Image (tube, rainbow, N blue to C red):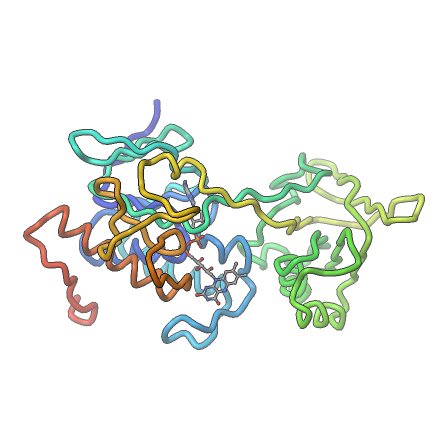
Length: 326
Ligand SMILES: Cc1cc2nc3c(=O)[nH]c(=O)nc-3n(C[C@H](O)[C@H](O)[C@H](O)COP(=O)(O)OP(=O)(O)OC[C@H]3O[C@@H](n4cnc5c(N)ncnc54)[C@H](O)[C@@H]3O)c2cc1C
């Protein structure tokens, strides 16, 4: 039978803004459920640039994307939110005036308020045409923890920033790293491509993965290089396919909120036009909106504190200073 969860605040999207929302809600003593379609937290950072240095978060002069996600998660975890990962929020309805959200696995979440921090939508990885049967047995579309590739022969596939960044990060950990790209030109930052060329990572261009082989787990990749009659066979314990993602707002567009193209219109409380539904982060729009994490962090704090007062009008809007907390 489908699971039913009841919470004060339901946050849809466990990207950076959703994670900070979970901290803000926890600080107010509100129970929180975080839902994300991805199997990991971190939104765009985890999907697109975990190895890039982020320098424009207040008081963080420079930190890798995955370190920022880990810090945001630790901050949220202090208040023990419930994570429902790997499932998409699909429908919004109401029971006795309270929002009820159904997830793609059938889970039903009853919430006092919903905060949508869905960014640019769900990410679906562009799949590797060959070897899908090795998914999670050697083939992956993310590198949540580079250390998992210690002493492995790793093949990275792609020519964008993620592929180049992952190849550069993994070369310090893996036994070998080979990058396969189907064109000769790269889409990644020129400086990163130059670093890759100087790094000793083997780069095979104008080539595609034709097949993956192994006995249970992955052992070999067959690479078809343009103009060559026989495939090149490489040892491979892991293939990281960094071919990009397709983002899609999907069912959220059917929830009755006023939209402005691919964003949700909010007022100064971060309230949407759907009852008890707020939004924050990249998904919101209003005149003068700046799409930066630092802006999203402020928006989600505003959303949480306004939701807290809507849930209990006796509360004050100002949450108090964290320095005053025990
Ligand atoms: C290459 C790159 C570099 C960047 N560098 C910087 C930088 O240096 N500084 C900066 O401030 N910003 C930077 N940004 C922008 C920054 O990443 C975004 O502003 C930030 O990720 C927005 O956070 P968010 O939580 O609003 O949304 P996202 O990070 O997009 O997270 C949204 C989450 O919601 C989930 N989701 C969506 N719909 C649903 C649904 N229906 N059900 C369940 N889950 C759902 C998604 O799976 C996703 O995990 C960069 C972006 C890119 C692409």
